[in-house]
Length: 454
Ligand code: TYD
Ligand code: MG
Image 1 (cartoon, rainbow, N blue to C red):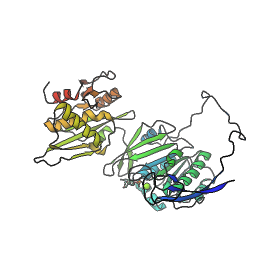
Image 2 (image 1 turned 90 degrees about the vertical axis):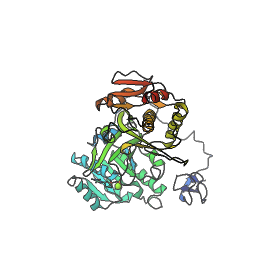
Image 3 (image 1 turned 45 degrees about the vertical axis):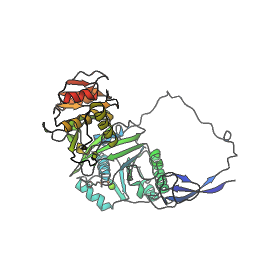
Image 4 (image 1 turned 30 degrees about the vertical axis):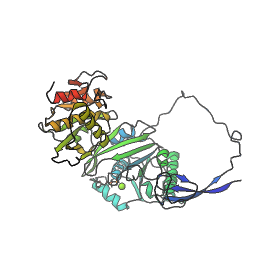
């Protein structure tokens, strides 16, 4: 006998609880549990081994039809997607408010429309006139895009289902969409999930590419149910600092390509422009005689990006607790490098305030940055500038050893293109024949070299 069972879902994390309670067991949020539409649960007595249809099993090694991709005519966007939009696929684009999601998508949709493809831009956040104004400002006012301001999924799908289906559908944003199949206000977990499900089903059926804009929460993850990320084929995030002009488009999941490529854009007067040479963006105007600066060739997927690491140390007169402030890097990692410099190399930072900054508002997660950070710190403390034509990379172990990092050749090649002439790097790893190489075994060797003790 089937019976309806009540369940309660946390609107914060999506966890399910069989009864209502004030606090979610999973994420600890208060008053976040809401009743979900009843689900029918059959008693488990049925034996599932009989009564079904048999499923056809196939070889792994049979002919495949590769999806035909459609270029967005924005190279950096295509690159992040793994080569263009795949018809019938769903993409979730997340990012902080004001980062430029709507701008990027408007430019994309206009490009496709100019190529003669049918496109639809559905805005649930802005009025039609606002979108038109933005398009005009971007110089795209005459693009033959079908534009609508709507939030009812039923209305949207009824409209789109009429006539030839669009090649690209933009939904800005999924949190504003409302499906009348279930109850609840737009933005709740069940509404977001159900609206997304309907839209994705339509896109798959009609072979349209679908891009859903998703809001992000305070900690940067896409708001709403985590399942949203499972439902789509590709998850892209648009990152960057509002105060800086560069933006990075990064895939964190991609069923049709790799997740290690990034697209780099700059937000300008006339919208987002592509940045083909990101290194120029992150290397500030460098001066030969400034202490505390080091250039690190970071790797974004297979793409090297040269960035400047800046360190500043300030001696404290009294016994006050010295500050450590980091922008763009992990503060735990900085503490580790400081500890290794202190314990293995005899350099004391305990009476100094230490500030570390990655120029251009870039965020580094590549562990190969350790050596460049250490060199910037040593340079700041000893007031000795590093050679301005040098790049540095290497991972530092707690023992003070410097370990090789991946793709040394790629990093060196990019630096060479930009006029750098020497590299400070670890021993080991693959051999690279290029520019002057100074190899260091331990951090102590680097300190000795920089202080002129070797
Ligand atoms: P928007 O695309 O609305 O961001 P999102 O959809 O992610 O919330 O971007 C808005 C910001 O971009 C806004 O602060 C102004 C800026 N901007 C420019 O600098 N130049 C432009 O040409 C456009 C259209 C926006
Ligand atoms: Mg927007």
